[in-house]
Amino acid sequence: MAIKIIEKENGEVITKTSRQIRRERRINKFQKYISTAAICTMFLILSSITAFAANSENSTPTNVTSTSTMNTLIDVIMWIVRIAILAIGGIPGIIKIVQGQQEENPRDRNNGIVSVVIAGVGFAATFAIAALIKA
Image 1 (cartoon, rainbow, N blue to C red):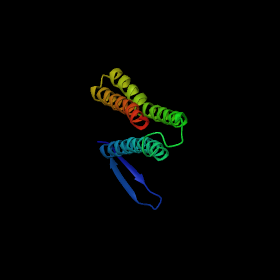
Image 2 (cartoon, rainbow, N blue to C red):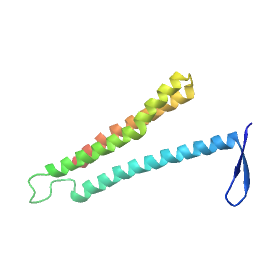
Image 3 (cartoon, one colour):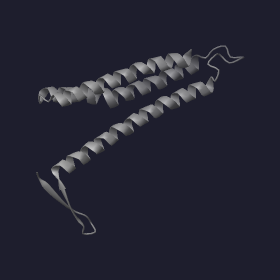
Image 4 (cartoon, rainbow, N blue to C red):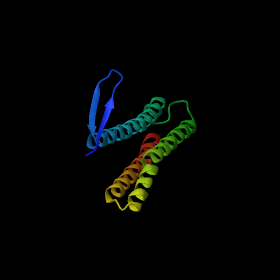
């Protein structure tokens, strides 16, 4: 095992094994995935709240002949969320599949496949949510 010696500004010396360094990198990567998932969820929730706030009873309000502007707004917001889901989950998943296949590493390939499947489910869910909001 390789040992890396790190010296902090205050003069403290820390030794880390390569295993500890790999764990820290994995944890940092996982934290990035969690934060991007939280951001996507926030966009989805905010768009739903906005749609329901403007049309709280989920029907055409009195004295309003058309809700086409609200439906257009919902469509635009949902496409923004869909693009974010694909950019955060789909594209890196495809890259991971290709890297895993090229390096003959089934773990990376399977992780990429799972990432693409999760992104696909999230993408499909946005269509269902948009239909529920407009109904």
